[in-house]
Length: 307
Image (cartoon, rainbow, N blue to C red; front, side, top):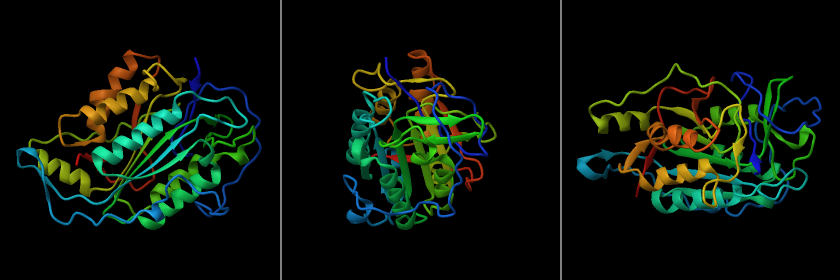
């Protein structure tokens, strides 16, 4: 069984080791520019190529007289099977494609896909910078990642590994740059969904409680800045199969997106209802729901809104 490994965190996120093959690591210092742009490779679709959907200024009617004012929804979806220099994966691309389709068709997201050869270090960083330059405080961003990663225990540094990753850290993407990027991004709510190994501890200081007035609660979550992560595992390897053509995590994440009874719901509700227990019962991995420290998280949540 192939194992999918990713570790996602920063200096300020307490990290634990993630099981992976030994890799050579050279000293690396992150540059001052958060997301450099260069080169000419283009993704399947670019945010810059998609005409922006006007913000929903008027409340949208939902069942049971629930009305919410929302902004624009964007998604960057990354999936890598065909690694050039490290072991390949089986289900990451199919997972990413299916997630992108559901987000676009059922939730009205404007989606950019970076799959296999398009998921280079340069393209990933370029798209993150474009999102940072495009989104406004009324927007919401979801980043879905399915691929390998590495955690350097000695330096306490975590990395994403793009399609051309080799055994040297200068070919990877240090997680500090992602964290800095989401802090600087103007979007009100940002959720990263990582179907891979994540080394870190769940921050327990923030636990939203559902109020009696659901409309007021959801509107408050929408209007309050949030920086959150859902990861498919902690410090253990996570499965690249077991979900009927998907990873076990992707299977239940998609099931939640498709089957949540409420037309509007939070990432926390999705996690608790479809991921936290179901993935743990059907695998040897423990999903995590966590906020990013020092990212200007203010206690909101990512609200999914069905069209």
